[in-house]
Length: 354
Image (cartoon, rainbow, N blue to C red; front, top):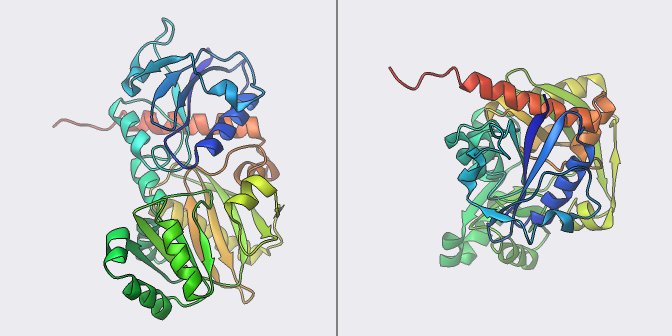
């Protein structure tokens, strides 16, 4: 029996285009002997559009934006698929708000549909960098110094906000929207003028921003895969040719080097692995995360963040880490579907009545 796999992609998010690239890559890697592929495109204004079952890879993401497709309500996911009993698995290939942040996951939980990846809590906490860092602090996970603001508090006294950053964090620092990934809206600041411009930039993308201490460090990443018993990939290192790994370096210039496996000794890798798994469990993650670290020259490790739906093309760090660990891209997708089914089955055993 083939698995009827529904792919959700696009989304009402600044990372809409990233999601389309992810969907194109996943479709190209799926084994059509094992999966029937049912695409649903979510437009930038939030419309859900159902496409016809796909019979093979697509050459351009424009083929995945169904201008003539059937508009559906999200709860139509529970309806039968061409006379069958419905979808076997939902795979949200959504990055950023309205997809990676627990919103879609909550809907899927209400509909009692099996899905790939992290649940509501892990997705929402992982998307909000402030909440994530607060939970990591509670779990004793090492991090760089940080502070945060909501737009209204900044607008009521901008000077006080800038002074707080300078006194608590200092320069250099990084200003980020709290609820975006893919390095959208992030600025490095070394002066008051840059800090003011960075606040303006970040608040375009979110009502909450986070400011983090800048450290001179290597950027090391591990993939984490599993549910209750997660495992880690080999380590990888990002070496940007710019000051930091911004959106353009990731998706436009290719202006960065990915070193896999990274040059880390056994003792350092063991420490990274321990913190990655502790972080995974602190957010109650499931399926997958990419754990991102700073490692200083004197061996200090700081957890930067976990990404609950990391970049997922064959050339993204998470799939490459697992490829070098021994799990190729098609097998990684199949493994994630298995993990989603495993978690859904476990949830069906929970009692909801006395």
